Picture 1: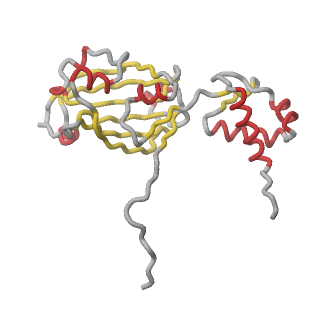
Picture 2 (picture 1 turned 90 degrees about the vertical axis):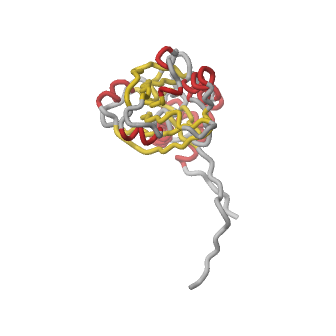
Picture 3 (picture 1 turned 180 degrees about the vertical axis):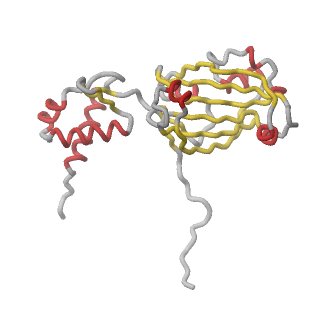
Length: 249
């Protein structure tokens, strides 16, 4: 039986991955020059550059023209199965989330929000807009809407220091129990681009979520944009229902 021989690009990626695992480079640490690595591994520089480009697309490395290639900040992983706050999820990955409060105001809900929350038109809601950063780098802009009568005095809470989920649970007894989330693609507006450090029109994740407490009441409706180069979305696929066989007509 003929043994499988890895293609040059695949071998270069394996060698590069092994180097990163062995040396455990911190974000911002520089890799050895391409010439040195290509000679050490016995591969061409063009093949090595192809592997490096692949790792850059995956957010593992980044390059600075005339300076070299560096280890990137690890991506934040958003598990679509769970119902953790961003701070909780980041902590489990060894990452730190910081929050900048952009807007917090009490307002009257329009038709769309009234329907979502099952309230009368004009009922009071809170609007909470935040910029979330991981490792000091902007990752996500969130705009959340919450029914004001279920969380009076929210404007006095320290939402830059505490997660919104912890405030809801600890201060108001509202335990997020279930939710739904939709993910799509959008493009950065001028304002979003300035805050998130991307070019206007750059592609972003568009995430719309609804969170309910144990009484099945909607406690948060949230719209967010996130940088895809700094976030990874994961889930688990499971077979649903019985296996369907093929039948001839």
